[in-house]
Image 1 (tube, rainbow, N blue to C red):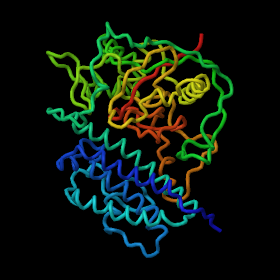
Image 2: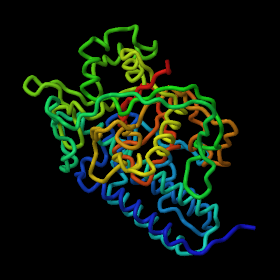
Image 3: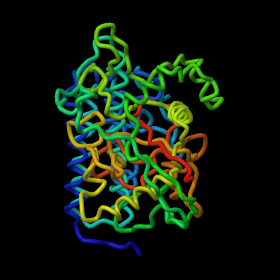
Image 4: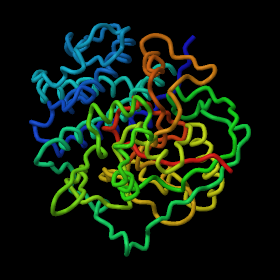
Length: 437
C-alpha cells in the first residue's frame, strides 16, 4: 500500500522557484542566442528549457495520470537526452539545428507542464512521486548550471566577447603586489585512518551515486588551503609546461598535441593588455588571485606533477571537508565562505585570507584523482531513472565541491560530479594534495 502524506507546500514553492530561476537565467539573452549549440557536448538554451520540462512530463505526469495527454507527441523524441528505456531520441550533436519548436512554443510547453504540475502538487502524493519531483527539481538545477556553461562556450568563442551579466564587482583585476588580501598557498595535515564516505541520509536529497555510506582507509595526507590561482598556473605555462611531455599522462599528451592546447579555455593574449580571460561579464585581464578554471583533468594532473604535488582522491577531499567543518563549528562554515552559486556571481572569486582551508564549496569544481565508479553496495534505481548516473561509471573522473554557477541549495559535501578527463568547458579547477612525510 502506498504511503501518503499531506500536501507539501514547501515542495510546491521549491518547484516554482527553481522553474522560475531557469527563465530568469535566460532574461539577458536575445532570441538569436536560444538556438546556438557551440559544440557537440553543449546544448542550446532552448533545449535546456524544453528538456527539463520533458523530465517532469515524462517521469511524473505521464506516469501517474492515466488521462494525461502529452503536450506534443514528438517532444518525447526531441527532448529525450539519454534514456534508452524511454525510446529513441534526436542526435545530441544536432540539437542546434532545430529552429522549431520556436522559443515561444517551448515556453508554452513549460507553462502547460507547470500548470499541470501545480495542480498535482496541491494534492496528497505518494512518497515515491514526491521523490521524483525532488529529483526533477535537482535535475533542473543541474541544467541551470549547464545552461550557463554552454552559453559561455558560445559567447567565449565569439570575437565580440558578448557580456552576459553586468554584475562584475567580483571580477575586477587585483594588483598582486599591493593586495593585502592575497592568501599564500599552505598545506594542512589531515589525519588518516577509517573514514566514512557518502551518505545514507533519508531526510535530505542526494543522487543515488552518493550512496551508500561506507568506510574507506586513508593514509595521512596534506591538502592545500585554497585553489590554484591564475598567476600560479601562468608560471606553469611560462615554464614550458605544455611542451614537456614528461609531465603528462599519455592520453593527456595526445590531447595537448591534437588540440594544440597551450593555455586554459577562454584565455587570450592581447598585445596591449597581456593575458585576458573571457568571463560571463566580458573579456577581462586575468585576476592573478582568482582560481584558474576551465581546465581538463589532464592539465590539472600535469600542473600537480610540475608542482611536485598531486591531486587528492575524492575520499581525501571529502575527509578534508568534514574535518574543516568540525574545526570551524564556532565560526563561519565552509558553506558560508564559498560562493555557493550566489546569484549574479558567475566567476570564481579569490580566497579570503587566513590559514584555514577554504574554497571547498563553490568557486570551481575540483578535479580529483578518482575514477568515477560505484560505491560498494551501490544499486541504481529501477527503470529509466536508473540510467541517471549508474551507466556513466566508466572512463570518467570525479569532481567535488560545486562551482560559482552551481545553485546554492544544490551543493553538498557528498555530491559526486563526473566528466571525461579531456573536458574543460565547465568551471573546473585544481586543489593540490600530497603524501605526508
